[in-house]
Length: 146
Ligand SMILES: CC(C)(COP(=O)(O)OP(=O)(O)OC[C@H]1O[C@@H](n2cnc3c(N)ncnc32)[C@H](O)[C@@H]1OP(=O)(O)O)[C@@H](O)C(=O)NCCC(=O)NCCS
Image (tube, rainbow, N blue to C red; front, side):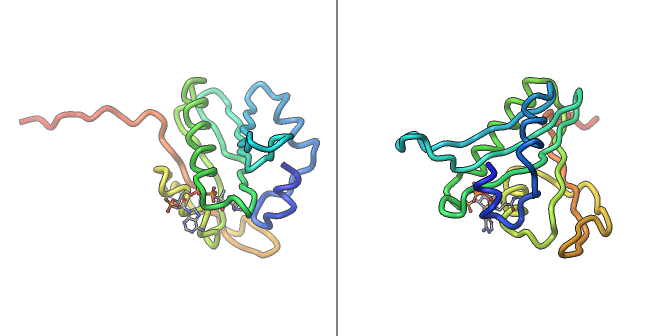
């Protein structure tokens, strides 16, 4: 994961201790996509989530630049969505830079929607953050009354 982080400027700069702390947290979920045809398996990407009761957050997601646009990010999000839903989460939130078009393309294609704008959130470079949300239990369709 740190290797992917070094190659992706857009990723949150985490230390090894941050990943270890999340892995040990009962609400933490770190999914890793591997290429099994190499020995040892090559890590293609990862997604790090945290859940508190029925709300989850996607804290970090990255795919190795040589393997981007091959469906890895989509597969990681889908696996996370399934696991978090089974664990009782009703919604996943995340923060993203408005300038991060690949990430926005991925999130919007998976059903995330714009929840709110967080002003002046990022530094280096300075930028607002979009807070996106994904509903894991869409409300039942209520039939219209005649
Ligand atoms: C964002 C990221 C995780 C996407 O992962 P990926 O494996 O390349 O994405 P996928 O191949 O699964 O793409 C799924 C969909 O996302 C959208 N998408 C992905 N990359 C895109 C791009 N460069 N431009 C526009 N849309 C894109 C498309 O809708 C795509 O579907 P399609 O290929 O059928 O058109 C990857 O680009 C990455 O690691 N970026 C650097 C780190 C980062 O920005 N993390 C997010 C921080 S908030």
